[in-house]
Length: 123
Image 1 (cartoon, rainbow, N blue to C red):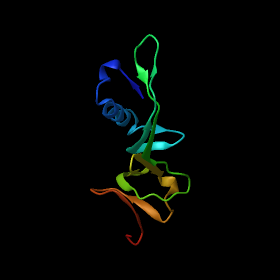
Image 2: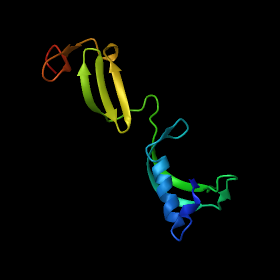
Image 3: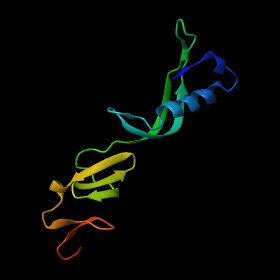
Image 4: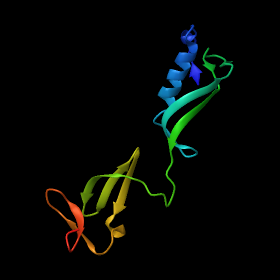
């Protein structure tokens, strides 16, 4: 984490942790996935002064909860929209689209107040 010198006061650790949470929670990276929450800070190393700016970069080791679904994983999701093209659902931070081409052939789109895909027997 990088911090401006104005924050170099007795509560420096608190400022670093707050900045870590602000900068990292809610982000998504290819290596680890979506960072849901920072759960703990193990270690904050010695700061390195950045020439010309006065900012200091601190190495921080922390634990976090991540969300990284993989192919074939079964997720619990909430359907948010249904239309003749398919349906959208959300599983945590992930928005999912299921095309009507992936919906079984015995299911048909039913428009109306509550659009849905149903079988001929109504289930």
